[in-house]
Amino acid sequence: MTAPLRLGVNIDHVATVRNARGGAYPDPLRAARLAQEAGADGITAHLREDRRHISDADIDGLMQVLTVPLNFEMAATPEMQAIALRHKPHAVCIVPEKREERTTEGGLEVAREENRLAHFIAPLREAGCRVSIFIAADPRQIEAAHRIGAEVIELHTGAYCDAHAEGHLAARDAELSRLREMAAFGHALGLEVHAGHGLTYDTVQPVAAFPEVRELNIGHFLIGEAIFRGLTPAIHEMRRLMDEARA
Image 1 (cartoon, one colour):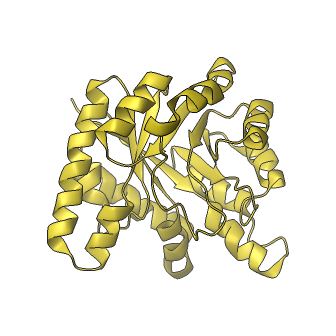
Image 2 (cartoon, one colour; image 1 turned 90 degrees about the vertical axis):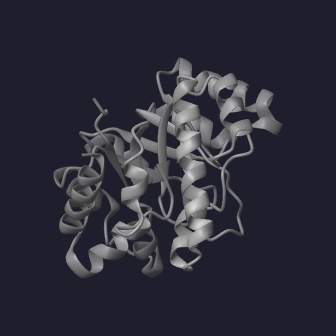
């Protein structure tokens, strides 16, 4: 029997809109509450070093109000490690981060930084956080994530989604095949496999159908779609498509 597929809703870009005016609205915490009421299995928030969207106060608030797990996305820096150890969220997802990027551009380079990352995640694991590594669908990176003691990998679906959006069907299908193979590979190593980045109503079902994938993390599209139909209906439709694909 195929395992249930969880939906993590990323609320970063509610904070992006709020910060455009420098006020208090829209409130990411309200979005998180609505998302969990709509059936989200978890909330994802990325506290970037430059604080361009989610703030420290947002993380404080989320830890207080959430009844579903918080997936705390963070760079592998001492500052972020200290924040994660103070809050002890359910999960931490280690992501690459560059100041000049608009959004996370690719997966974390684990294979070249294996020793540093192994030492970095050890205190997080000891504190009871599930450690996830956001990586490309690359066997070298998956093997390295396994060696350093990560429990979860999140496969970067951005290249697949970009190829679909640009109408490059051969590239899209090749990326989808790579994701499918690497999901199976990670699962065979004993890792829990998640996926995310750029997923939309048009692209979610092929990924949701992978039996090894246990969770999808989706944010930017859902927040954008909420402008037109509301956050709750937007999440309901994503959940419906995921469940349909899984069935």
